[in-house]
Image (cartoon, helix red, strand yellow):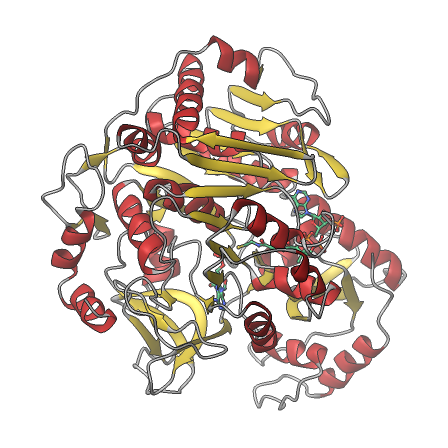
Length: 630
Ligand code: COA
Ligand code: AMP
């Protein structure tokens, strides 16, 4: 069936369309109801279906001839480890670790936080939770203790699973002090912690709270997957909004499993047995969907890479991995290739490797800038495919639907909406805009299976943040346009979310931290262009009266605060002291104009500005910037 027929069906007859697609997974009990609404009017998929996501990802393949096929490859240049698990081995380990969780009384519906580096035990922990119906909540290992504490208080886990350390290139990052500090800061500490002890650094365990992963695992009995309702939550994944309080995106079991399997074919053209590699981290949605769930549900071999695109050991690392494991499909954020391009602009290192197994390269997580797109196209001579999605959706909203019918690509465009997603461009009043007009990107409800069903214990916030701006639509927070041939172009966020090296962060949250410095009266944080990371944050600060602090000292203190309270990956390195901030007469900070000035882009003085002379002051502040913090 052609892409356009499939797409039209998905929009005009979503229930018929998704019923057919849902036949592709092994339900315990097939759903009779495809789409429904709960008491608060929120959409639900496959309400009366029953399944288990861990069963679909593991046991089902063992039962159907894939027991000896490699399910998971772990390649860790930072620890010098390589390891492979067949479907039978992974199933056995997940079943036993699920048994270990049971010994700590973890049950269906209980929350389990996973705060781990990129090691197989993180994947095993996720699948073990799914097996017993516990709701996992993975927190990216680069987050500081305070961020972990916020998530502990919101998710209220019975158990936290962690490791003794992470490894950043050649630096050991002890996790246990971060975990202990987070638990100390949290109002709802967990009863148990399970710590996986890595060889590089052993953590001291505090009894009776902490348990050694290996001891618990050895003493446990394997357990079978339990039948769950399609609508039971599989996981919570926190993502940045516009405030310091992260949003707990809730994913169901049924809709998610259906969407994951459908996306592997439609978006990535992957079949059972293919080797699929998503170069992300299990702490992000890309890791959830495309390191763990989609490839395993499909019966692919998935790759877990604990390393960087460069420096582990060089800019040829990706090519080495693709050759070594004969990777067929590779998905990564464009920033990783900008890092490679910087170190190896002519692709000399690529010549050392045979990457002929690679059929397609996929990029997402941030805008794929045309220079990087063209560089990759010329270097690799395979399709280079941009696609657009977000934590909330779990899979691509727009992509080149190569598994249905490949389309031409246009540099800068994520191509077409994927079946299930009705994408519209709206003006501020909610009117649908014509082709080529830039506006707010909204998705007509219902969202297809796989997308968030609500925010954890806060449906009110879900409605207010996403559904209330344009009734009948989900607000993506991105701006962009559709050209007259239907190609979708994403131009960036319309809210205070910024994207640093493919990581989503809130400027509002950074402002809260900076404003808490004793010398700061007021501040504004904006994301400015960066050749490598896409965007990086900078802050403008106004000092309190009678405060005398050197600009460099303040900058160093603010940098330390953001590193300690969010994490180093926020890449906050620069702040400027100003006397005033540009504001509208009603007091709203004009962040867009600050961004334009910082980026050296042309801007026009808005008629609503309080005092235009402030813009000259901001220009002066940028030209006398303190040295960057390294
Ligand atoms: N645990 C602890 N610290 C972490 C971390 C983690 N999991 N991840 C990053 N950090 C730290 C780094 O050590 C670094 O600390 P430093 O400032 O003390 O040196 C800081 O956060 C910034 O790290 P990073 O963003 O990795 O920048 P980099 O300059 O070291 O590397 C890239 C640049 C482009 C190679 C890197 O950002 C990258 O690989 N990006 C891909 C991003 C990605 O996969 N995004 C997925 C979302 S889909
Ligand atoms: P996250 O929720 O962390 O995956 O971040 C989602 C955000 O990243 C989106 O809302 C976009 O702003 C941005 N993004 C993701 N993919 C793309 C893309 N292909 N092009 C442009 N922006 C993207």
